[in-house]
Image (cartoon, rainbow, N blue to C red):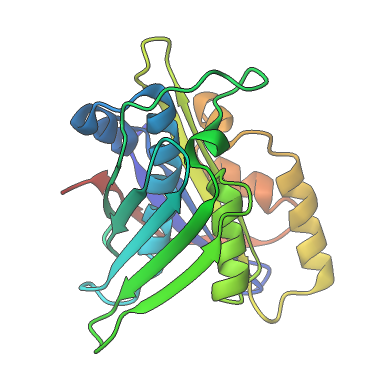
Length: 236
């Protein structure tokens, strides 16, 4: 499946949504930086989230930077994204290794406790900078918290990256669902129930689900439409 991002609206403008599939993006990052499996997954989540946030920017020259600074062994992670779908990033310690925790990669342990910062350079005298604490250090939850506290936009962020047995990237993708000020309790409740039924966004992509299929699950029982589709790629 090609790497691309879609933008959508639902419930007569009550909701806006972004979804991305990014296997090629993350695999390129893995090769370029020779990342360990846990670094690949952590960076993959951040690359995917930032790629979607990048296309939220209005002007072609705008640049968005998302940085996570935690006290874990992976060190700082920095990703830069543009409105055209280009994204790039790196981790301070790409060779980090940690034992599994409850059978899963310990992303939170690798990242540690710290701060998530978003910088938007929109060509003004000073860039916009928004900071928030890391609430779980799982990246998706932390971006959700950022949107709620720094941009006052209730959001749901789902991110996932999975690997093959040889540690190459098997699937990667995510979604950002945002409630507009006119969103009703009924609409919010419907989406919350639908999102709760998604156990793994990367798992859906592994099954061959397209972004349109994933949005159809999120917006079940609601009217929605795709308003934009554009490619995304790892580009320095």
